[in-house]
Image (tube, rainbow, N blue to C red; front, side, top):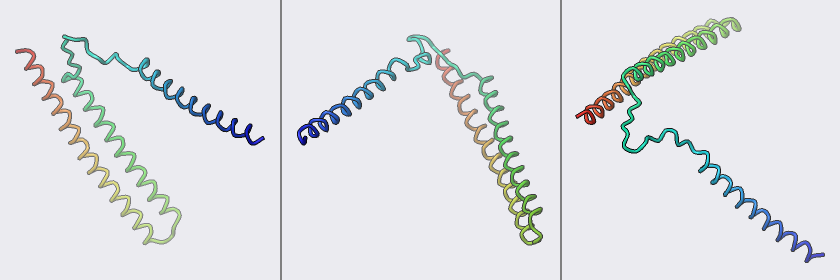
Length: 139
C-alpha cells in the first residue's frame, strides 16, 4: 500500500510540474501572437503623430478634467460640512467642520492650479520637442 501511495505522490508532482510548464509556455505563446504591432512605424518613414492641434486638445481636456476633479472635491467637502452641521448641535464641531471644508476647498484650488500649470509646462515642452524634430527633418 505504501509503494502505491509513493508512486501516486510522485506522479502528482510530475503532473503539477508538467501543468506549470505548459501554462508558462501558453502565456509566452499568447504574448507573442497577440502583441500589438500596429504602433510600429514602417522603416524609412517619418511619422510624427503629435501636432500643435493635438497638443492643444489634450491640454484642454486635461485642464477640464482637473477643474472637474477640483469641483467634486469642493462639493464633497461642503456636503460633509453640511452633514456635520445637521447632525450636531455643538457649534464648536460645526465651526471645525466648516473650517475643514474651507481648507479643503483652498487646497483643491491650489492643487488644481499647480496641476494645470504642470499640464501647460508638459504640453509646451512636448510641442517644442516636436517642432525641433520637424525642423531637423525639414532641413
